[in-house]
Image 1 (cartoon, protein in one colour):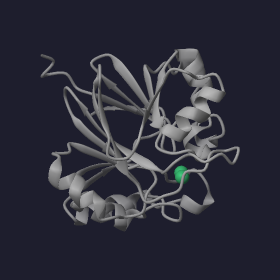
Image 2 (cartoon, protein in one colour):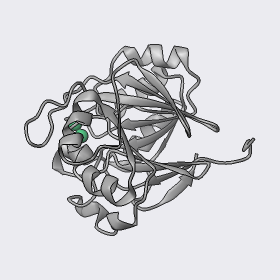
Image 3 (tube, protein in one colour):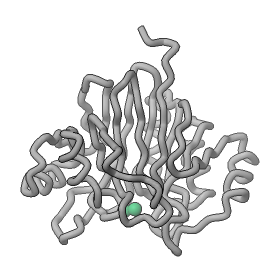
Length: 232
Ligand code: NI
Ligand code: MN
């Protein structure tokens, strides 16, 4: 079934993106309204079935409550973020923790290690930061979340055949371009979508230099204009 169906990827700026798989929409790390680069995106138009939150930092969660409410979406996140969302009236949540997986109606999600922190905007503890390995009917997609380069990625790469990886490339808070390229090698994946760049001063990058670096290592870095959709 659905073998000729393409998963679609829409970029909403920073580390926020939607994956559409067989008509089910998965929104990752909603941070849109404060992002000047995403001023053309209206969150009222975003109607995900699921919201996946990698960690509690504001630049990954700030629009989660509003979008979860308007779309009646199920939020997939750490136990601690699940508890925090429940207190704010978002009760359609699915708590997970690092190393665990669950089969949803769109495919399987495994929560993966990330070398990062995860405080929530009000100072609450958000558990540990994480990434997601998502296996749909069509593709295996790895989103690392905010993270430094780490050797756990080798394990993820050895145990899974990843079609596309979504990696932060902006430096300062996460991997830079060179480390993300090394990560792609660890993951045995030459198809990379860059996120977590340009949004604020600390993470502005040169797009051409970034793409050239990946090219020199035989890998492809895709940087998607905000609001645009590609086929995976
Ligand atoms: Ni962060
Ligand atoms: Mn971040």
